Length: 475
Image (cartoon, rainbow, N blue to C red; front, side, top):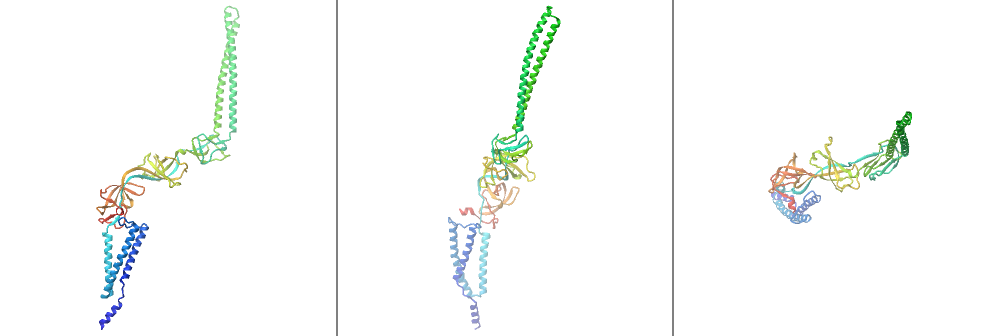
């Protein structure tokens, strides 16, 4: 009677269990798990599964359908087992047995996933025709820049250019009040006319004295002949000779007056040229084909000699002054191609080349100044605008490139990378070459021919673990 009561109590504690519900619950859990995986794939946080040539949505649908069917049958079977165990043994023991079995199966699955299952890895591939570039920041500048003004003082009465204007060589930019200078030039011209009249007068005097000298010479000659025959007195002969000498002196004086008049003409003409040049200095012209970048004075301004009025640049001399870190500037050479992106034109890459490398670096910033000339100067530019500069130092025919994030112990041109060799993970210390602007390093030496370099680190990497190449699997 006591045994029947105990059995009745135990049976009363056992709750009925439906295997179909167990199958549906397990199938729902499987669907939820794979739905989470699908969301991770959609957000780019996980790699999609691929079955043969099927795409991601088709593969996901097949996996979810298979999971639903398999989970339902597993749950249905476990439900039947639970029913049998629950009727034959105590409920606590049954629960402990199921929990232990689930823990054992889960531990086995976890161990296989972590330690035995081949891990998917991404590997680097050899890339051909790889440009090696150096990056720097710079500004748009002009090699030829001039501050122009008048050589004389005066008041500005005309301005013929403004900021942004293009001026051809010789074009008038500004004028000063030149009325006083024009009067000085007129006086110089009058002085030339006066000296020319004095020259004509001196030349006439020369002709007169020449005639007087010739007449005195003839008279003196006749008197000298007559005195030999005692036909004239000695006093008359000496008087004639004295008159001849006086006429010669007058002739020499007249010739001197001609020379003085000619010298005065030369001086007057020099004065005229000086006054004309000074008048030209009252007009400011462009010294070359230029662009006006600044107008420093306005109409009515009183200027001193040499005070600048405009700032000009030669638009053909526009280039980019780049600042390159000294640690990266050693391979730059004059003539190497370059690209730059102006801040105002972020979608355009302008072409150029290295025109000059300044011999003196910035001692504070430890940067080298490099001038980059445009292959084709843009129609519009702004001096001082910031530019990103990319200088190509060389081009590699082919290279194996590994991201910096995939290199351990990076330093002194060496580092350690993970490799896939004969289907298993290994570690190799390699020698590194050039570093690209995107953060990838060239693997120069230390990698066996059959080894593949892992280019993305992830959890689960362990020496000797089996590995699958994700890129090959997707193919």
